[in-house]
Length: 287
Image (cartoon, rainbow, N blue to C red; front, side, top):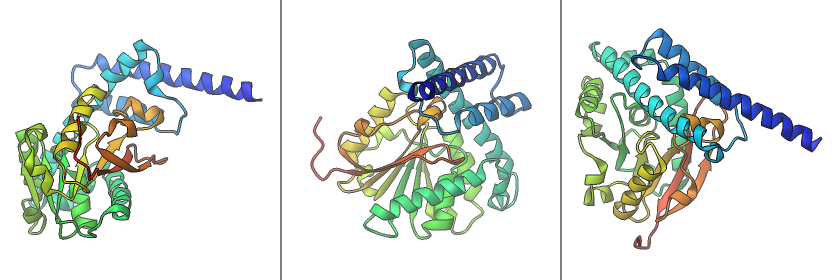
């Protein structure tokens, strides 16, 4: 029975990889990844293919498939940025943009992810209402910050970092009409690798899934945070698990020298990202 079970899982794995590669082939021939019927259909297919819990370890697949996976993560990142820009501009055309935020097709996912991250974070944070939080890679539609600030952390200051000035302009416009959030959400047009002493101001730092699209770049960012975050502060990272690793980079606990990994959570529902919470070591981080 055991060997039959493994044969079934091998077949399922092969079929999964084949489906993902076919979707990649279709995506890579598109002229643009801006929201359109073709783009939306293909990415919906990709997400539905990768969402079910799977024992697959995408980091151990053959080299050719690894190459497709890294290109696919880049395509997902580009498409996600274009989708967020499109909806941020659309929402920004209303007098009170946040009244219409439910128009974004994945808004309910962010509500769930925000609740999950807040619940996990509150198990480990020393201060129930942290004064200042940084979100790195906030993008044109900073839904995590908006959800956390509106629903969970109602006195916290949110410092949103994005290297893209136009993304920050769109994001800032979303909260400008809200008297509370416009005071508590700040936007920095800064590469986080250029921020040193400032990082020690934050009790919690969130790192978006698409900051550092490969392991090497992700490690550079994590090492920089380990060097400059305040001892004892929390790092909340987004990762991926199983087949969801075709959509987002995977971070392992071993990728976090200088941090104590406190918990790893792999959602089984339509929240795609895994969540890792780690505490900056009290000892001085040694390279």
